[in-house]
Each structure stands twice: as structure tokens, then as C-alpha cells.
Image (cartoon, rainbow, N blue to C red; front, side):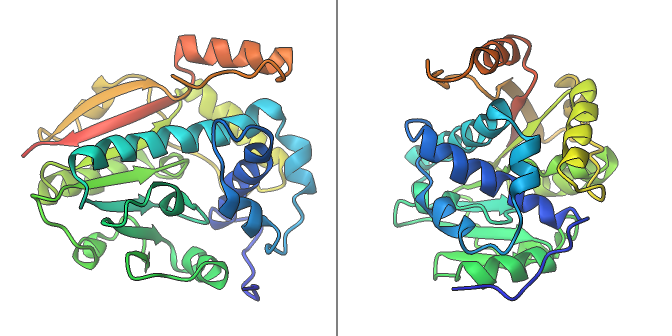
Length: 274
């Protein structure tokens, strides 16, 4: 497939190309962490100049994309081990290719994103019976009715690199509604403390996109526990369990160790009460 759909360069939607670049570039270099052949194939089809991205994002930033994808894959696999027929919803899916890596032949998988993003995705990736797109705003709860949900089968939500672009009150409202509707489900997302989000905004600007500023950060779990009485919060370093490669630069290895110790980047799990 080839695409005639063009993303606006100064938009949140265009940020979907950053993790695609990271997964394609660094899974070639370190497939032991993530082997994303779909990303490698897809990036060749995108009519986009990745040179500014490659110049702005160094080895550490690139490797965090495959580390993050691996952590989300592992979280889904752990959930599917207990709920093999679960529904999986990828919030802000963009050009994510998680389904091809974790599919057990039984799940129902949904890629939820804004209409422009889904149009671009569908120009490169076709829907299949168990891997389909929903072209809606995450904040519009009407998407609740577009997915299969059986409480006995379970449901798990993932959102990689997306919640940063929302205001906390927006997230609080929609996630409280999710916790009410999808009892027993789990939601995984990544987050950074306030000072790190400021640094990330500078990085995105350097890549050429000044229209996708980040707003949301998490300094502590107590902040999230106020969202709803129906959620339980846990978190850990996003890089936990990722084995460093001695071929990485010394700066990258030091940054990995430091970020692991201080939870510079977090993987957060919200469990929805039954």
C-alpha cells in the first residue's frame, strides 16, 4: 500500500511518526529488545523527511521507543496469560504495530485515534476482523459502544506516549468513566515528572513540530488516586527489566541507569475495581 494522505507537520497527529522512526531504526540495531518488522516495512512507505528527527533524537531517545514498546508488549502478554480472549484497546494508536507482536489468535484489538490519524493509518495498514480502527477522539465516550467487552473475558487498555497531550482534568473525567464502565479492566500508560515534560517539549520543538506541546505529567501516584474510587494505581520505571547492550554509547548506558533509579520515565498501571 502507499499513501496519498498527508499529515499536518505541526500537529499532535504527526507525532505518530516519531515512535515509528524509533521502533524501525532501533529494532534493527537491538532486536533482542524489540523486533518490529512491521515498523521497518512501514517507514519505507511514509512520504516524510525523517532527517530532522534523526538529527534531534540521539541513541538514548531512540532506544527508549523500543524499550517502551517492549514494556507494553509484556504488560499485554501478562494480562492475556490470565484472560486469553480479552479485548485490547490501543488509545492514540497512530502507526503502532503492537497487534502483530502480541496476537494470540483470540483477542479483539482496537486502534483508537483521531480521524486524521486513522485515515493516515488506514492508508498504510488495513483493518482485519480482529484488528480494527475507531476514528474518534479519546475524550468522546461514545467509543465505549464501539468495542466488544465481556467482563468475564477482560479488557486491557494501553496508551504509549499519548496522555502527555491532554490536560489532567480531561484525563480524570474520561478515565473515571472508563473505570465505571469497564470493571476489572487495566490501563497502562507512560508518564514523566513535570521537569521531564518540559525537556521533552524542547526536544519535540527541535524536531520541527511546534504544534504538539505536552501538558500532563505525574509526580506521584497519589495524584492519580484522586481521580476515582474505582481505580488502584501502581507504577515502576519504564526501563525496568530492559537489558543494556555493551555496544551502546557510555552516555546512553549512564542515562539508562540514572533513569531507572529515579523513575524518570514511568510505566503506570490503573486497575479498575470490579
